[in-house]
Structures are given as C-alpha cells and as structure tokens.
Amino acid sequence: MSNFNFQVIDWNSIDQTEHKGETGLALWKTIQNDGLRMRIVEYSKGYLADHWCKKGHIVYCLDGDFISELDNGQKFHLSPGMSYIVSDNLSSHRSFSENGVRLLIIDGDFLN
Image (cartoon, rainbow, N blue to C red; front, side, top):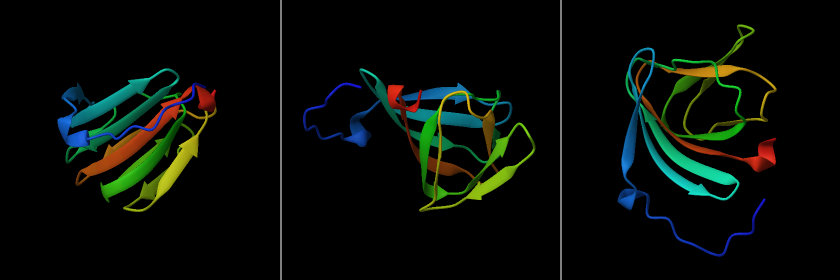
C-alpha cells in the first residue's frame, strides 16, 4: 500500500454518483488513491443491493441503520457507531436499509 501525505478531505466538495440497487438508490462520494478507496455512501429508504459483493471493506455506520446479509443467510443489523470488516473473497455480502443509512466505507489493497 502507498504512503499518503497529510491531507484534509472536504466531503461536501466531492461530487456524488448514483448507483441503483435492486430497489432504492445508493449515492456515493468517492476518494480514490493508489490502493485505497474511501466513500461516504447513502442508501435510500428501501435500498437493497443488486448484487452479492465479494470485495473487502471496512464499513462504519454514521447515521441510520442497515442489515448486512451474508450469502449463507446470516444477517447483521448495524446502527450508528457500529462497524464491520471483511477481507476480499472471504464472504459474499449485500446491504439492505429499510429507513436509509449513511456509511463511511474504506477498501483497498490491504484487504486482499
């Protein structure tokens, strides 16, 4: 992984991209560095991911709540102040949010 000089990120100045779920919408503000991606992600009410993700992440719930479901049927409810971490290719997961949620998601080469 690369070394990073000190930098301040003003998330309010980052453009937002839209990503449709199976239901609902995800809004991403993304910072991409060499080997590291950081995002503020908002899921709308009723959001369900349109795929099972195998990518590794560190996920921190900022506001709202959501369920992270594993492809083996396990479900984990996360609310503000809670996190999960998973490495690449260790479990397929997808998110569902009944009421909407705002997350900080970090992923990158260090989760290979």
